[in-house]
Length: 348
Image (cartoon, rainbow, N blue to C red; front, side, top):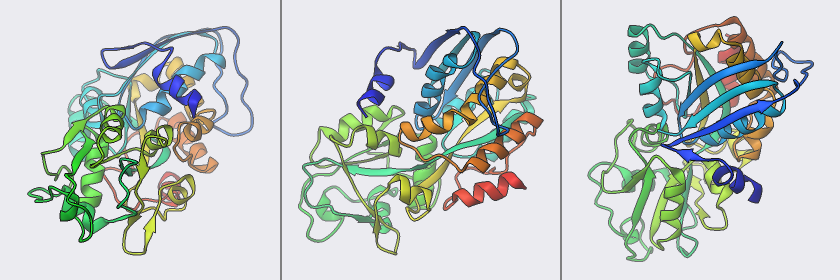
């Protein structure tokens, strides 16, 4: 994954929390076969596409923005920010950005705000992720954690201060917690899956919308425990120790296989992009989304997430091409959603 770290951190300028990539290329890629064939446009494409939101989806959108100019002619500038799912949605529902990256479905409150501002949107599932619980590599006592133990650690009013408070036999090592910031869809999903209610969490932990900051924190503290998207673990697995999670059927470690087959629960979840209907009408946006749903499949796996089945991408493209607005995953975080659930909802 060395090349991935370069893609993530080098060669591209991050300014004000947004990655700005000037897309200038000649020639067009030719697609074939499926409805979500590779992006190609008639004539030169130009314009600016603004994307912001989930730090979890950021690696996918960043990779798409980097590879897009190799198959699409013209001149397009794409900015990719990572202000968190809720932070991106705040901008999206008032028309400040074209595309919102989201690690949970759009909430009812966000839908109402969008409607009040005349913002219609198209919802597109793009990948599956397994939220990963990690500890420092020097932690030699944790071989797994149960969902009940995670709840005991993270719930509001938790009295857990040391590892000994988590389980009898663990050492009295102080526990230092690192997790998603409150504007993050990861925060919403984790709290719903583990505590039982979105945004219900103890406050005395180190929050960040930047998952690389969380990685650094856990890496530097023997007693640390943190959580973030699977891709960030994959890129930093030499610095972290993954924790298998027991949801009542035995410990399961997140992997491409366990996330895809739905056995890693309750922390597996779909990832989305939301495209405004106004942006949908622009040819450069259509070309980018077409690329996202075709060549983007390989990039999803490359950055560490789980691609959806080809049929799901084809259905998503058909939904986008028709300009079908609204959400089939509305209402915020939904626990236990599997890939076949996405197929059924998209087909409906």
